[in-house]
Amino acid sequence: MGEEKRQISVGQFKDMMDLLAPCMDDYLYVFDIKNDIYCISPNALERFVIPSSQFSEVTKTLRQFIHPDDFAMVDDDIARIMRKEKAFHNLQYRWLDRSGKAIWINCRGRVLFGEDGEPEILAGCINEIGMKQKADNVSGLLGESSLKSQVKTLYDKNVKGFMLRLGIDDFKEINENRGMKYGDMILHKTAECIASAITPEQKLYKIVADEFAVVDVSGGDAGDARALYKRIRRVIDSFIETNGYEVFYTLSAGILEFDKIENHTYYNMMKWSEFALNTAKNSGKNKCCVYDVEAYETFLRRRSLVHKMRQAVNNNFEGFEAYYQPIIDIREGRLASAETLLRFRTEEFGMVSPVEFIPLLEESGLIIPVGRWVLRQAMAACSEVRRTLPDFRISVNLSYIQVLKSNVLAEILAGMEEYRLQPGSIVIELTESGFLEADDNFIGFCAGLRENGILLALDDFGTGYSNFHYLYNLSPNTIKIDRSFTLKALSNDYEFNLLQHMVDMTHDIDLKLCIEGIETQQELERINRMGPDYIQGYYFGKPCAFEQFLEAHICRS
Ligand code: C2E
Ligand code: MG
Ligand code: MG
Image (cartoon, rainbow, N blue to C red; front, top):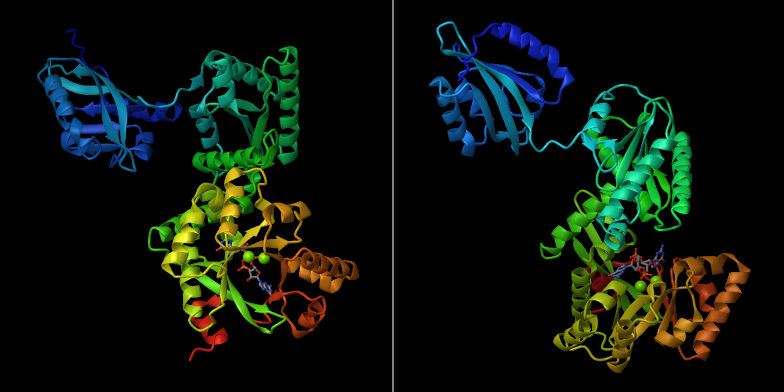
């Protein structure tokens, strides 16, 4: 064992460490064994739960940031150094980071011996085993940890410039169809194409699987970033062409302008640039989007709403409420039915509009349990009202997701039996916008409604998708004219005539027609002249909770 005598002091070691620490990602340390003092580069304190860059009672203090399962291994190694059994320390074990997570490290160090031949100093270097590679060998570019180092230099500085985050669209398919090797070639070529389009001041990095980042700190703005994106696409298009269209692929991008954001931490910058890139991908790919704070806040609000709604579903639907709005049979001048309209309320968001939360329920699939719950609420309400008004009907809005992805017809039939509801007491409202003519589930559902005497209303009629063909295919019992159409008809002769024709035509083919959105006596009088069957609107009552609905619209003995 070649023992080495100490030639430099602990103080000198420490000075050298402080000098070198800013130049490295690793952590230097010196353990003054004789005086039981340990010094470590200050950058280690940002990462691990180390109490101070210099501490005493070393074996005891080390326990504050070494994973408990590794105590014995470290103690044993130190004891062997003390017994002069080894002069080199090389151990892989775990330290705890600031969030308490175990991080694998490799600690290497040399033992230096004093004049008396006793071990005096252990000095060396610690590195994180799992640290991302500095460079990506497939693309030949610098990797994420290098990007992190550059971004770190931007913290709290008023830098003008941008990050252009680029992602290959559907890269997974290239890998699946052509194999990983071909995928690697595409990554490499794409890297070359991007590198050839940037200026010498711009830096290019390879980040996650199929993404690249260009950082510009030379004063560029979103316009420059867009121009760079276009340049890159042109280079890639010409690569695809010279490659004989062996493979065709596109590239999307997210742009982050440094002077439009605050708090330039690496974490934030990656999060925001990823959001911008995802926005580009979600809006059709092969395009670039600039990071927009408001859009990001909307995204966060939606995410939080979905989270709250999921909690509500798991908490007996607390926060959801079924409201009811009267629908008047205008020829007989009496209450015919009510439409069930879902509400969602939380402390944080207050009352949220279904226009906002229904699409979120649909995207997340939560519309299936929530829709089932609304259906049962509506049936229970209908059964109660029918004790006073025997021919009262209840309307329930159904989403296409419920029709296509759950057995909603069976649920309706089971509910009708449970609540002893006659055929004709339930009206299902479907909007024409999601209608899928060719879908067997859908056709089967509509046929099932007819067979069981469940009525069908085509909602939102006149809002853009109107196709008279649907009337034949769906054969609804009623069509409902949306408030936006009603408003236009009330303010414009052409639309008024159009609506009049629609009422007449509906009657010619033996359908009923309901006009929505009547708010005033005056509106009622004009619309009434057209001869609709039903009217729904604030004039007769706003949607309200069931108890209020009973009080306002049902005279109970
Ligand atoms: P919709 O089915 O067309 O419902 C009619 C909407 O018009 C309701 O809005 C109602 O409050 C509103 N409205 C009725 N009369 C008037 C009026 O005189 N003036 C004004 N300004 N508005 C009036 P709401 O409750 O906000 O619901 C919006 C949409 O959300 C509904 O449109 C429906 O498409 C959807 N929705 C609501 N509840 C459910 C549900 O339980 N399931 C599904 N799938 N969709 C639902
Ligand atoms: Mg409706
Ligand atoms: Mg409607």
